[in-house]
Image (tube, rainbow over all chains, first blue to last red):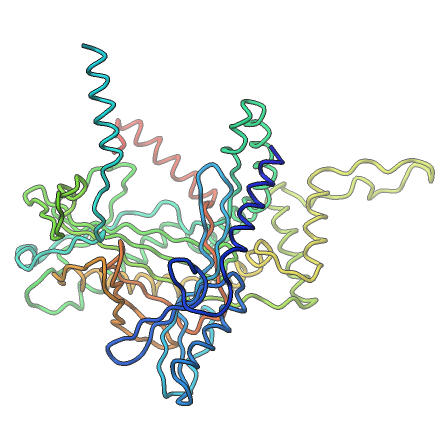
Length: 118
Length: 393
């Protein structure tokens, strides 16, 4: 049984390893990267998914820089979760971190920082 | 004949399994005519019985173990029990701690007070308004309340205790009205043929605590929290079996108790330089409870206010959501908090209030623990329901 469990873990690892984690747009064959939607007011909603949390935040800033260029940007990340993946009968695992936030170009002033409950 | 029936049944089952239900948003909006018809409507708030549930990641290897028969099932069950004891115990402690400030009675009163306040402040005019606000205990009265908006609410602490999610569902049922789906289908699925006239969900994501940096003081706080947990669990602090003077310098040390060994292991882990989710949870549960639970109560009040406000607004919004669309920010609040109307997918039409400027991710596990005090209360209610001959719905 331990061998099978080991094989399953290895397989999961191999499959994750196969998906590219390089910087780039997300797509049907690319679960990691960035995706954005332009809003009617010209702002963006930017979505990032990456197995490494720090890289995910770095991707957010990098993509924001690309979209806004020298104008600078104001970001407000409103979703920062590591989803739980559940397969009945098997141990639940946590998936790759997901970040989602609003992005407004042309205003370099950062949004209020991470605020603890008060 | 019997064989034929079996073939027909098997074919029907197969076809049923293959038929896919056309996806549609979960929301059921009221039509403009229904909004006018409802006018002053009663609100029945379903009493929450579980309090703030604390989430954790539960291990389950039953499927892999089952392939190896009874022995495999037993082995996997005992392995799961060992792996789950720590995180499950931590979540239990957090739930018990939070219940010292947020008993279900307090949670239920807080929600009711927000609806009462909305009732007082509502302006005269058309549309759905609050007539009376009452509470309903579903264990004792499981039937749907007729001609009333029912509000059900749940509270969940994240695995590392940085955040709390509050989810409310509102439904309106009326035996004299029939639900007509506003969504277009090739063939209307069964779940869209009956049920509530109105339904939607409202999610409040709390402001978050940052994960603490491990300083000597924080490590000591962690050790204190671990010791407190063990006192709560076993009645006293587990002590070493070798604490007393040894009989002679040649006598072998006595085997330590399992409780003492486990506690020692946790204290050792607390003094390393990594912060596990269990450790973060132990520390941050204390933060929620500081100053008589002020941070916790502040967030719960904000959640209840959001829920009351947006349920009333949404009842008066006949817009039909679609599976494809984009989110719409409907309110921007201090500190970067936003309220958005979900624009796509199963949750289209629902409302989410999220904090802004998030700097770290959090996780909500696949299992929850509830406080012992609430578990006992549920048992009492179930016993009463049984005595009264109440049939669970």
